[in-house]
Amino acid sequence: MTIIKSIRATAVMTAMALASPTFAQENAPRQVLFSNVNIFDGVSETLIENGSVLVEGNLIKTVSADAIDAPDAFPVDGEGRTLMPGMIDMHSHLCLRDGIPWARTDYDQMLAGGYTALVLIDYLDQGFTTTRDTGCNVLGITKGVNNGIIPGPRIFPSGGVISQTGGHGDIGFFNDMPGTVDDLEKHGWSYIADGVTEARRAARHNFRGGATQIKVMAGGGVASEFDPIHMTQMSVEEMEAVVEVARDYGSYVTVHAYHDRSVNRAIDAGVRVIEHNFLVSEDTIIRMKEEGVALSAQAVVALEVFDPAAVEQITFFSPDQKAKAVQVNSGATQMFEWALKHDLLIVTGGDMFGPDHGRQAENLIWFNKSANDNYLTLKTATSNAAEVLSWSGEMNKYKDGPLGVIEEGAYADIILVNGNPLEDLDAVLRQNVDFVMKDGLVYKNWLPSENAPAFSPARMDREAYVSR
Ligand SMILES: [Zn+2]
Image (cartoon, rainbow, N blue to C red; front, side, top):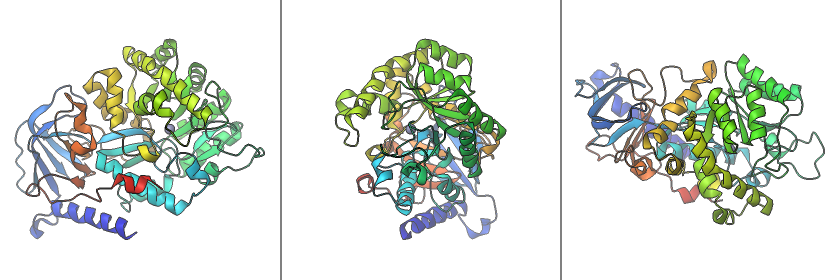
């Protein structure tokens, strides 16, 4: 608590220091002027060379290829770094640690909250200023972030995932009777919903708590015990009921699905985003394109973590789960090829937890092994991601301006990176992210101290908190 408080206090103090160079200007709108930066704006294939960006309050006021005259602004000399939108991770499980065992055995809600708070700081440290959580008990912690109590990226929470009995969200025990509330459900991470009424109630309960979209388990998954990959989950009527609830809130549904039958049933029901998708045919990809269904791609998990040799090293997977992981890996490269060929709307999502929390940016590196297109890859974590986030409609809590772009009126979610990510994506890896601003506040500053107040909120020692 003391640590969190001091982080928060430091963040506020830094923001104030940036805001008010002198007491005389205390009431003037606080401004920060970035100069000597090359700008990647999230929607252009080339950089604006040696540009300037003026931030006022929590929004971007001016973007220019020339110098900006703002004598009262706090100056930040970018020294030739690339200024770009804070990145967006579209598939997070912010409270998930060490896989399912964490929820079953030594789970404690307070500990989970503390752990999640550290994960949030880690997202900022990596340069992610927004994330869409695709299943975890983060509705409360999202309010904490939005209210400025807890430092963290903007969160678009799904609340608990909606799963049928024996589905990807069912982590009960073999001898459980129907209706048993399992550990995930008890801790607010999932709903076991059978039938239209239960599915509808679960969706409404999520939105009631502040969910911005709904996540449904529509097919077999890797890290669960009772659902082989090939199975299709949730009836079309159940999914239609959830979609109807989402539409009533002006929002949308995303599903966990790997293969044709799951994905097509979900699209039949009106689902707008497919998570994973790694075992579908080209025909399904074509349908997704035709019907404007987006792909949320988890490249690191599919290509690296689920590589057959790597899977053998996963200590918390059973032999069955390992076989499922290898199966997913086998389809991933081909699926990416088709998705790129047919120009799907693609967003990037880490889907990481446990020891892999903290590697979200590597997802871009792995995706680009298929895409071989730095610009497209960067869009998956900036403007493309923001487009899908906008589908949350009125449920979106961040309505002052657009996300994922550097333009006049957009949120001041800005990072400075070493190098040009349009040429070398290593520029977006944590060690090259020197400056992170979210909502006009500074959360990381590795610039030389004469450029701006030295501030690096709890540069976390990853090992210290990802281990038990
Ligand atoms: Zn996931």
